Length: 106
Image 1 (cartoon, rainbow, N blue to C red):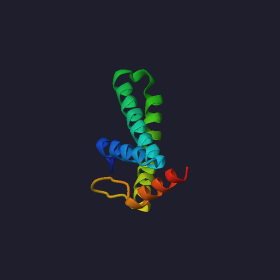
Image 2: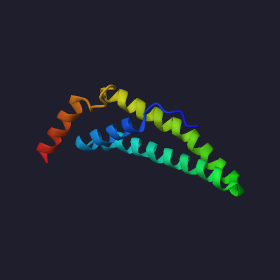
Image 3: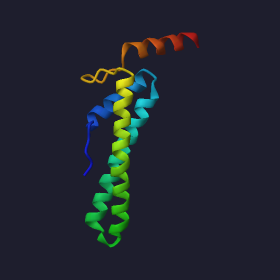
């Protein structure tokens, strides 16, 4: 079973905020987490409906579990380093100001 620090709503909020403020890195990690969740769920469904290839699905599910924690810890560290508001998952003002400066210089 995947242990989750961030629920789907939280990941989608990070993706939305990142795209609005043109900071794609947190969004890419959040998207990867959603994809890993989908892959894990798919493997669980295959295990239940097609036991013939159960070893294949177990191997894939284990790889997802092993990598999921690393990616979730990575997102957690990014949010801390960039000083995201953990309650609202808003990007910090400093990154928004930097984004506006970069846009005006273009």
